[in-house]
Image (cartoon, rainbow, N blue to C red):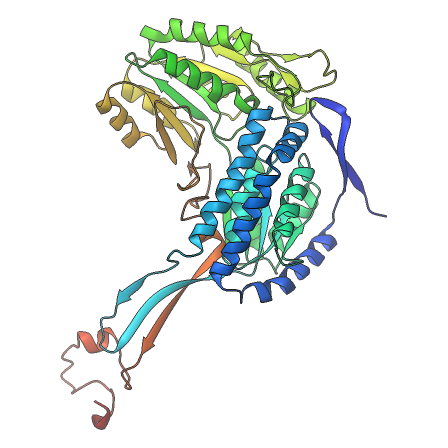
Amino acid sequence: MTTTFRSVNPARPDDVVGEFPAHTADDVDAAVVRAAEAQRAWARVPVPTRAEVVAAAGAVLAERKQELADLVAREAGKVLVEAGGDVQEAIDMAAFVAGQGRAAMGETVPSELGDKLCWTTRQPVGVVGLITPWNFPVAIPSWKVFPALLAGNGIVIKPSEHAPACCEAFVAACAEAGLPEGLVQVVHGAAEPAAALAVHPGVGAVSFTGSVATGRKVAAAAMESGPRVLSLELGGKNAMVVRPDADLDLALDGAIFGAFGTSGQRCTSTSRLIVHPDVAEELVGRIVERAEALRLGDPRDPTVDVGPVITAAAAERIAGMVEAAVAEGATVATGGKPVTVAGCEGGAFFAPTVLTGVRPDHRIAREEVFGPVLAVMEVADLDEAIDVVNGVEYGLSAAVYTRDISTALRAVERIDTGIVYVNAPTIGAEIPLPFGGTKHTGNGFREAGTRGIEQFSQIKTVYVDYSGRLQKAQIDTHPIDTGAGAAPGPREEDA
């Protein structure tokens, strides 16, 4: 008998979104076999034709945007406007990836020898394993699925157990668009199917988005089973630097959206505010005032500003981190605890929180909270502020607010993150540009943009020699005098 689990609405846990099978390692094995069978035919489909299927998937998503946004709000707890942005990101990704179907996928270089051609191309890896989180339950699958499909792969995707219905709806849209039967397989559950996917010998690439702790386990498991492509997109401890000449109205808007959008549950959420003492009192006071005015509630209600965190356990974990920060000397300027919302009894809500008096060595200033908590540090010197930005194990996103172009460019040059914003919050990546970070945020791969296909394909270098004779590259082009006559080579009549 198959074990099942329920996905529930985090704002109303009594609202069951769906019941799903908890798949086992045997189920993963069967899914890999099915995906591999379908992939053999898909790999022979011309790339522009694959791109047409991706474009058609985007069109289906666009038709169903309102329905899907409502599902994202219900299952992942994102307020409706942000849920719509989640779906739109997938629509935009489909359009971009489809365009890549007629773009260059290699390079041609001149040979150092005559009558010889050299070029590179990209080949599918076979079956790819995708492990995706709940906080962008449609967008992040699109970041991985569409490039993997364009590259000619079969797919086994394991979504978060907190957002299985969203993934199923996304894959159903792809199927409706004409995706070959069996090419994309979905497995559900928690640790067991993820671990099985990471070590499966039939999987040529694994792409994981989630926490650092889980990502390290996935990486270790994947490496044990042999060489493969492994892409990790892990956590962030993103900082906003506000200089004394900054537009404080702009910085205020950025801090509110960056810290409390998606209830602080983005890997790019603004978690640290590094502000100049001259403007700290005014800016922090205004942030506190705005935070206290934010309306918490059912994310499907268009008048709500902030939805729940994903589970009651997450709210308890966040509260524990705030308590630890206070014990280290921080002060709660507002929020700091779970809250009960009328009409959403049992919902996992946490008050938007601002902590002042935080030092760079505090745990709250170094560890990812993944909740609506903004840690404020006052730093006057720009170089010191940048050192604080860089002084954590993460390197995903950072922002600097200033009217001085010299200050902005110095910060851009010195900040050690994969993404840097000037006069914008730490969130808001765009489809045509690569997404990813440095240090423990990832392992060097980037998603989205023209580089998004790299993790799902392999480079093949091709040499075509039409000279009709043996050519020996550097041996021929730069021979040495050995004093023993000519090196063995072609027969005289072939020369």
